[in-house]
Length: 230
Image 1 (cartoon, rainbow, N blue to C red):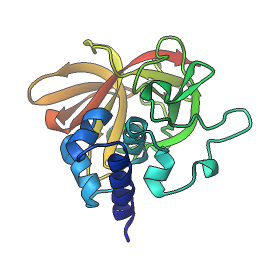
Image 2: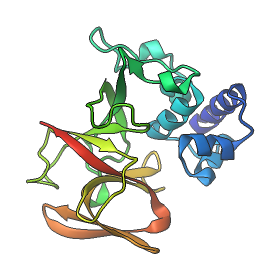
Image 3: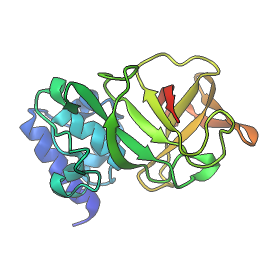
Image 4: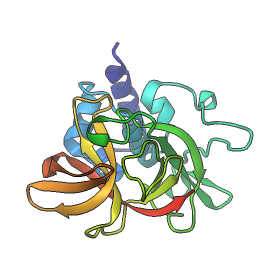
């Protein structure tokens, strides 16, 4: 059995236990593309850990179990200081420890093509959300690596992303772009937002200065960077 087929079986089981009828329902509550979720559920495409986190949060299951079948207690992010937040059927309690939301921290240690965040986004920890994104569904953090956005963002800084607020021209964002040529099928970009029209998303890199354009139908999400932790 392939990894994609194994994911498909686990996703189908989780969806059934959650009382959902199919990929459209799963996509709706996970805020993912229905066509992509349909491929996940057919076993023709392997979901990234990021996508598994979104679906698992909505379905009330462990994202690492959904991703590769591992037991949550074997998670490399678990430590004495930071325990696994757990996933309850009550979505209001998902990812909560001591009333403060725990959000995923992604690594960007691997520089992707066109100065992307990573060829395969990896959750390296769960960290406490600051006030500005505490309680925000889908909020996450990214650790900066490389010099592509200096002097605005420096290597080692942690960026907190608010995916639910409107993005304005010249805001700094993390944009997710569907890309079948990279592992996981999604490429992330820490950039300055220039524009989004009916045909293209335009972003700006700082170092070196250049514009990047992506077809609109390839845009998965655009989240505004709400806070920097140095």
